Length: 253
Image (cartoon, rainbow, N blue to C red):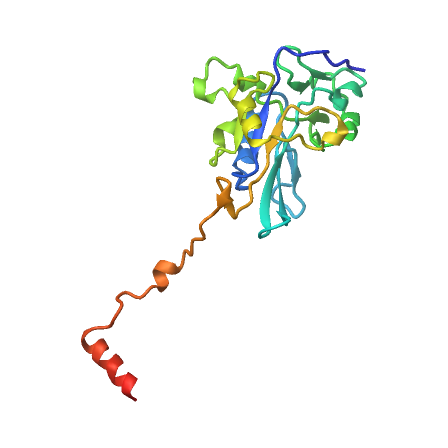
């Protein structure tokens, strides 16, 4: 069995803003593209154009309709991938040592050459964040694009996970959550970042920023805006010309 490090120098991870995620799946597509062409074995697909397509994805989006205690129901888009837990059960159950957590940055990875595809890590993960690649017979998971974030051949702005770089609504943020002064840590503190399923006691590094009620803005009522109002408003207050004469004539009938 693989042993977890007692501490890690850094805690690299994602902060996902559920208030601004629009569920466009751009992060899913970019993740699939980058991880198919770069680190590890390609992410395979089975019968992609047939009647029963399936495939391996390291990041997925789930959408839920949520009914707050007050206010209208909201559609929440919930991205989910490996959370790079501090107490990662997927690592400690691995019989070959293929799953491991890096001391230098806390990223959980799989050494595919040692993976036997037994699936124990998938059973141990309470978040369903691991997938067996049917073509390669090995377990796959989010790597935080480890081959990208340290790549000095890339421009500075591109040294972030592919999902973060491509998000059009700026709902995904990347950084060191072990540093209280980092941008991501401050964002978590300001917005009340949450752990996913804290009762599992896995201490996930990734955090979620809760969605805000849609009828509130800046701790006050949000002004209601009728988008059809400009189209329904009269062009002039009082008709003139022929229409004015016709209107007055009809009033006398």
